[in-house]
Length: 475
Length: 149
Image (cartoon, one colour):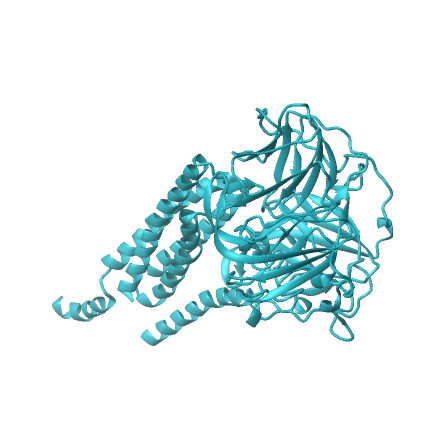
């Protein structure tokens, strides 16, 4: 009898442990994974093609002309060290050239920018990603996809042509959810004007700053100001102007067609996104509200009015006037779905509530396969319970509709799209930049929790691997 | 096996106490941070109290509940398997209520209520193991009794 009891006990134990163990084991992310071998190919209804193993172009060869001298040369030295947040105090984190944010990089449209990144003391390695700039694939700065992380003592040189004027930023794409938060970012403006005011908002460990400073920060103004709002954080930020009206003149580095005057409304800056406002100064100081809280930017001398966040918001779906697109979305070659969900279970062995893409969990997610020259349509649908700022590398996408309502304003070109829970966007883009491009949530902890996939071009391969001996962890 | 069962049940009860303390600590820390000019939003990482609550609730207590259930198969405690299964079920329910609470905060109130139920049931399971006579003694009595009558 005791033996039989023991046997029943053992069987019962197995029945309890087997399913748990199976789900746990299934969730483990293999070491040394290649973006090429990840998930499953999704051809979007277009013809299937070689995923990029045979007769393929190495992504590392996709770079701008080599025999051209740089017009702008910058050397950035990354360090792990303590730095000062003006208005608040010291902070433990990461710096570029001893500051956080790193130095602002500016260039004229068409110039070749060369940035030498030196890692002096960031233990996990660093990279630089040029957020919103459609650089050649080898210069995209994604550890494990377009390069290896630059380990302490190593150097990496980025070269790219500043093709499009506008407001951009740069940040590390190695362990980005930790490194960006702790300071590895900076501003990049292509073809700045004489009336520019930059407002790069960043939250360091619960401390919201603008241009690196806490509290009410002040800058001098000109009669007309071009305010370049940059949201380097993980969540969407409402911004507004107390004391003046404005026009939204650019979104994510692309000019808005025929912008109309706005009064008493806020504008939403997606996490990772940029919005340029043109403010005609009233002769007195104005205050830029940045998501509420103690940090604001005052432009001009003297007291500035301070108000709450306006209830109404500029809707980019209908703002400005339409103009012809450079391609016809109706003639799409491939149509993809990017459905974001959430489910309980394990992720890489950890129990929790995890993101899914089209019902699958990282790394078993769809890889969006395209050929150069394809016109692509994609539906981004969010049923996950939280907002997601979706960021496709290397391309700008145009919004066609939101929740079935067609876009009627200026073409809304974006690289960082705020997709609220229960929202559905239809977007389109031209596949004109061969490479392997991350398409992920720019709430960087979400990316680290698996809300990442890739856009893969026919015949492009990468020699780089995730994790493994090179310690590449892009998220 | 019997003392292990008892210790596991009491550790689960203790875990519930830690959870009540850690979640309160976490939210009082948030109140103080915001008062000091910090922001609490999507950029804010969980603080010490919240991380503790997540770790204990998602890892430690579920692991203890699984162990308790497995130990119950061998411990030969009257009702031992039943009470271990109830503990396990309430732990699963507790996690489900936490996940549901992210979307519908009212479900979070039930998460607080279920915590008390789990505390009580884990306590009962622990008492069972302490009160019940060891099975060896029961067997001896069964053999020894007839001659006495």
